[in-house]
Length: 146
Image 1 (tube, rainbow, N blue to C red):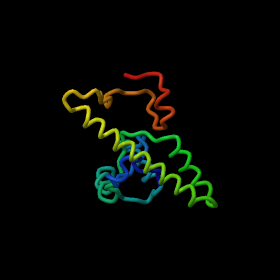
Image 2 (cartoon, rainbow, N blue to C red; image 1 turned 120 degrees about the horizontal axis):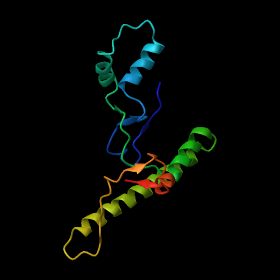
Image 3 (tube, one colour; image 1 turned 45 degrees about the vertical axis):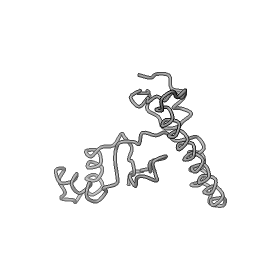
């Protein structure tokens, strides 16, 4: 009953889906027990059932951001059934273009490791941006990085 989404750029390598990072097992259990008042499932048993029934659900968001184009086309696909196929095709083309760019970036990273290379590659994975947002325009407009 909670919205969940797939990983954006890693969707080909993973079948994992992501719940809001604001959720946790405790909040899910409270919502479950509040919805199903006559249930006998205890809080101690609930995480086991959750992990068994939903092995591909995770609370941790993927480490990639979404693009403006992906967000826009995804919203249009959901709200515009008349042009759905055209929008799905445009989204698929956008994903192929993004995947090509990622492959080029990976090749640049490999080339940066070669002796005498003029290419510089940096890993900024440990830079924490606040607030935590996934939309790329917001990602690049953030005011605070730590």
